[in-house]
Length: 259
Image 1: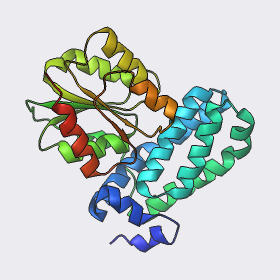
Image 2 (image 1 turned 45 degrees about the vertical axis):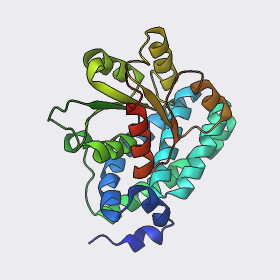
Image 3 (image 1 turned 90 degrees about the vertical axis):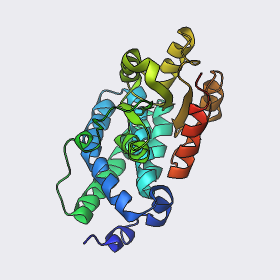
């Protein structure tokens, strides 16, 4: 049996996480998704740092920050946030000087989670969450975080077919095929490759907002990002981290806007 005291005694804010996940069963299940992607994410963060690609570095540490917030890894969330802010300011000196601190905390958390679960993480979490049954109504979740995508998918899998995309380009490809049956899209703003703002611009140029209502899910609370997003006819915006009640309310509101 998993001993939650192992997490608590190592600084994990379980109480805050349960406000989002609801119970330890869901928390534990979603930890598998975290392990399935975090080590690969850390490798990419290191690669972007080494080539001084601060734009993609900022995107990935933002994603790491969001995951850490969900699971109550408060120190990792704080360090990731600091790196996000400084990399957006193109402050390579800060990133370089504090990089090992970030990696040490991230690896500490990875080892702690492995010890807590007592298992080897799955290498492909998508196999356990993909729905094979076709449902009439679909919602599209566009987010580079497996944690967020799978969390939303678990909540709505009994009501809708939940389509998932890792970035904006995948979302646009899915929309080409399923446009008529997508009743709502939940869109992250900060993603590698094609980001959320590029998707919004595509929707504007192709008159898609009336066909597929869009709400934003984001960890970016800056006034600049919020003001920029609301220049488009989006339905609503939900800040990360969110809980089941929050996301259900936004999805119902978004679907109600579909013509």
